[in-house]
Image (cartoon, one colour):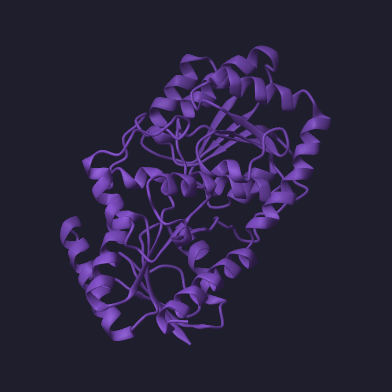
Length: 374
């Protein structure tokens, strides 16, 4: 029986989806999770929080978190110190692992952009729809650290191929897709929305592309109904764009909700307009509910969305005319929409909790062999 030491931030939902498969492994005795705050109760998981009610300054919190990771590495003697997102958690895990003699891992859930930046997220500079720029000095520094990790998980072939092209040992890279829980499944709900967007209303998501697409769709389908589920700093701008294009009768902003599975089942199509994604939960959620999706060519998501099979892939995230064409095509051809819907379940089965457990079991066994020299 082994211990794991994990550090991350993320939402409670993401914590559950990432960690729960690990708890089902018989070889894992305990998981110590260093996080800003305690999260949802998970079997075998103990949360360690860096005095969140007393330490609020970001850099001090990061320092305290790093010291806690090092302390619990010495106390728990984990088989692996694993992190989610390279900055800052991956670097904290790396430092602690190297100083205490433990194997270290990182999950690059945001994709290749993590190898360019220390936490920032510039808009329209690192779009996954286009070739990424050659590594600069900072990128080469980050890559040199990443090469010294013992295991790197990615969410699909786009990120894996990128890392290999940058000189990362392909044997260290493991594809580990995201999974969602059983609440996301087809129901007999009435399809009272034609198009659904679920996600944070931030610039990188480019929800304005969807709104402009609907202004085109409206000319052919004036009664189209769209639900935008989520909240964020761009909401006011997006609502203003909706009013300026005279779409208030077509587009409804629903704000943040907790029952997103119900919204998928009330919709015929979902849409992703991001310039880059690791592996968005919204796509898995949509397919799990047998709702076809139209997505930009924004990274690892293209492993599970297959063009003209269970959805459509738009080459450019800002090509609202292409989105409009895809929406009109599916909504005016119900047999095609039905076919895509039936195909959704075929691929969503490949990203189940059982499949992720099997991948983690293989990772753990590989680290054990390295430790024993076998």
